Length: 328
Image 1 (cartoon, rainbow, N blue to C red):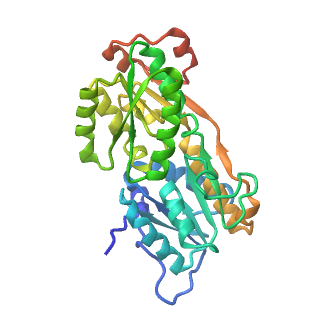
Image 2 (spheres, helix red, strand yellow):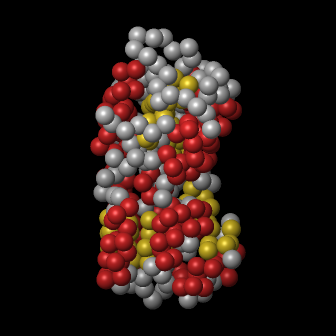
Image 3 (cartoon, one colour):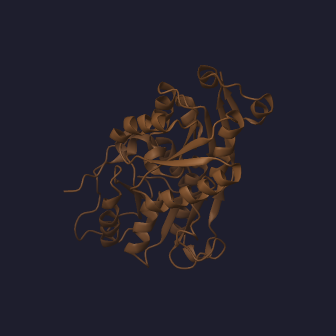
């Protein structure tokens, strides 16, 4: 049997994994929440999603039921999980990662799907256009993949003599990994830098990845944004970067809080709240084809000055002035 982890237990509710029984009619609409990661690192995102629903008047357990399915890093399980939601005829599928969105799209052309992704949904083939999605999909997107080259620029700004940089990608999420690699190589070429691509798809890969980074004599490391595996371990990866004395930049605040040098990216919680709001609108009767894809445009820069001092890096005062938050 496929392992299903019920996130509701993390936030204090006591429910079964599924409230539907064979042949029974649900007492309220059911939302299938599908994600490729594990629940542990996604409490803030799920809370934001639920707030988006509440903005439209929907509260889990009162007038709607949310069923959480987590692939726990095994993206190969997502197609079967999406098919299960289709078989159960849920009212809406909230596909809150790129692999989940692709699996949901492949599973149904009729059940409404609201996605949350860090990559361009047109480029991924999820929708025909941002303004006119068409079909049964719409959702919210972050700017994280699009602003990824800026992360390389940040490292280059504080490490001007480093000629080799590294990008960490998750090979089990090929769509995001391919886009991130293409964008970062173009940025590296513009800056005259050599880019090495490292891979990790489970926690056991982290130590060997940092060892390889040392062997390559890379000046710094950029974490791929928009990957649920990395997002759910952002603070852990920041701590590992500090432990291995590697100047590194991740996608959000948690990475810098954990010990990473920079956290730079879109507010993922904002994107999840937007997605929750769209699920609510669909439950009220709106069609996905009529709802333009929304973009979480707020981008935050968090600088860990304590990490910079430990690394012997002098952060320019103008860069500190651009930061939304400085950790001292």
